[in-house]
Length: 369
Image (cartoon, rainbow, N blue to C red; front, side):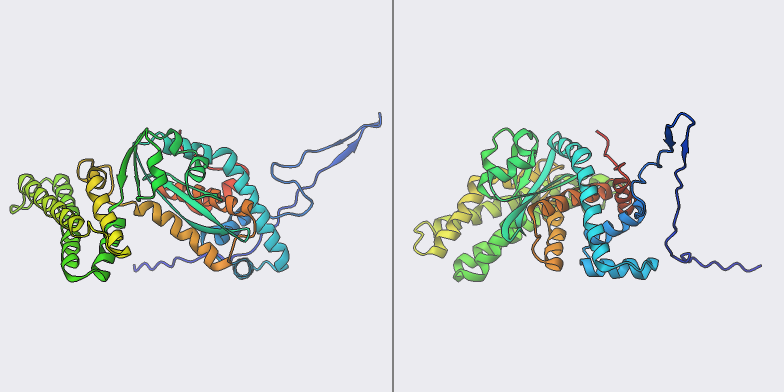
């Protein structure tokens, strides 16, 4: 016997379920009518599964409204006017967002606020014809995105995490983060590397050499730490590696890094030009906040950079790139809530389409408290 298997989708088409609500008249004159099934609120409507697919395509895969319409038609043979589907998608997105804002976002915010380590970032986000800011904070299991007219403390406070966060916050060197004093700060080294690369690209040769030395030492520290972590995870480490040697090499590279920073600071102490002043500010900051930049070497839970937060706001930028400026601030806030919901669900092993369907059905998935 030879077995051959073919995995195939069934023919996709819309299925219509008709609900008939019977009314009966009592001899006394009272008319009794059956209640509609849960979620059936109109004579003709779309179901939560199709609604979930629409929101998934529009806010999950960043299709434009016209392509969302076309895709729904191609997949399900639904011959619906474009304006109807567009308004329906927006209405369902608002409905999902309302459920998420009311029931899920507070849970995500609380989970992150009580976490030991969280990463933060922010980026420009156009809404209602003006520049707004999308603030991102995330852990390994939760993502919170918020939109606010302000980039600094007001926007951060509105997100609801930093004012009560007491763990370690991994972020860039944006000054407003430093106004929060009840937490431990860890500065992202990816930003420092980009600034050092700028020095290499624009500075004269002596300073370029020092910046190159700092870059190589910082990257080597990161790689040595990764080797140490990998060694701890295996029962049979490589013979040529041992924790003591790796620690010595890491300390040596830390000395090289600090020496390059001190020499760079001294070489630009005169701040003779705008560029020299910029270089000096970088070297001075990396020295003065040495512990914050090196915190990842002491605490395994602290990441080398805040790229995890950057990635969560990189995908929302696609929404603006595809559809242009969000027309209203409320629409941008709804989008941020939905993205917080779906990104958190995915990080916790949930299916994005399933959780959107649940939200459209007024029963959103909620992370464990």
